[in-house]
Length: 133
Ligand code: THU
Image (cartoon, rainbow, N blue to C red; front, side):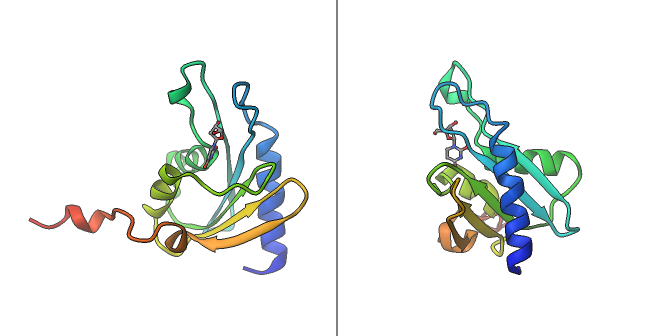
């Protein structure tokens, strides 16, 4: 990915973050998923009074993309106030769609860290374990 496409994805993640529904934690998260086609699908965290039902921004973006018929992902940008990294559950869900996904973690003042899902989730559970008889 070049600098321009990284910046574009971050802009979308920051915009998605403004839509976050986080009245309990006050920790807003936005995600922007870059599809192979070049299209971008956004997601944000959606909290609930029953705390455990909260949906993270990354999984919100993945569910939205898959529900719209897309499964080939190039990168995801995740925007938080402090550049926080995806939780373990989101890492597992992101890894479902391939080990090459680029993960860009960014904060609200432009700071960024770039990694890959394979680096963030070594030895994750894979579908190959389910295909053996
Ligand atoms: N959150 C995300 O959206 N993504 C993560 O990877 C970590 C945490 C949200 C869930 C909750 O709404 C808030 O951040 C605080 O945990």
